[in-house]
Image (cartoon, rainbow, N blue to C red; front, side, top):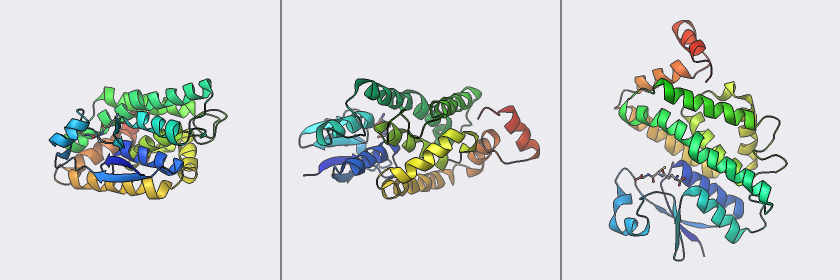
Length: 249
Ligand SMILES: N[C@@H](CCC(=O)N[C@@H](CS)C(=O)NCC(=O)O)C(=O)O
């Protein structure tokens, strides 16, 4: 019997959970929550999840949210011996560390950099730019000499989770060529994660559409300038000088 998954197309944590479903052969009954229509505040949804967040699962009466917690639950319950989250305590600890790095550092550094520009036209400040650059540099170092995100392992929950965030960063126009270890690892995950195209890229298209749709009325030029100023590797003249100045990104 499929698990109910409350989701929003394009939402990165929802895409992560869906990739875990694809990798474990766990089926979801996907129920769309339209965040822009504020459906997450409907009393029946709040009753289930007072934090009004997607993804939320309801596994025949067992309700859970927070995508990383959901991912561990799915593997623990439905794919117990999975290589996605091996039993060895130290391997698990390293996977957990990467999941926590994504939750506490990488993902918020991107959200704080990008979403205020996207939704309110507010340029990221130096601190936000530096935080994103530092988080990407740390991930780049972590991945040095590795194929997958955890040494000695094949594809794990850590890869699926980090790849979701990196795919959003990539879709937002941030140039990953400055982070060669991230770039090569990301290329490998795209071909290693089951149904990557079907699950993540479809959602990414929705994310890109949202970016286009929201940016149109909110001065698309502003965010483009901000991102190209601080991130794009190409450029000449004034742009190139700014790039040099912010060369850590
Ligand atoms: N840490 C959470 C983040 C979930 C999250 O921020 N979801 C957003 C959509 S991407 C949401 O539901 N926002 C609606 C709201 O805050 O009311 C996770 O990984 O599941």
